Length: 134
Image (cartoon, rainbow, N blue to C red; front, top):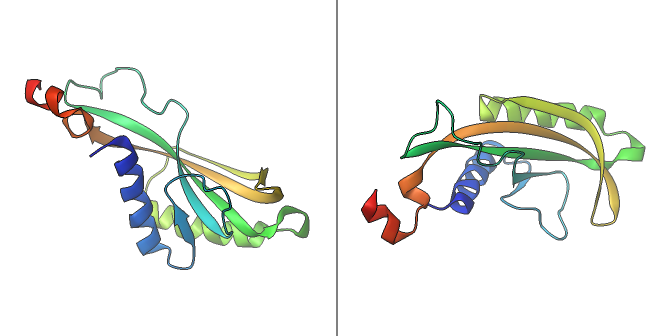
């Protein structure tokens, strides 16, 4: 499984648990809020450390929630409800940043970012020729 495939899998799992929201495994050109985007996070593949081995490592992603109400109209209650649902669906997170106004496709929306980290297998993302060597 590739890194992109792992984001698609996480997006599919979130879509099952958050049926009222559109979930994208990438930032689409024209998202339809309210929605969730699964994006490569800061320090997407962290440097080697105690949790990193030849065969496994951590992947950091951002689960971005976009409220369906324009920021200027006030979307706090909607964003809080989305956060409650997403945090319950995820079950774990590293950090939550809320109340971020972002221009998305020419409109300002209120967003929240949930940073998560999960383990991945190196052999699962290595090219076929490298998998045999591992």
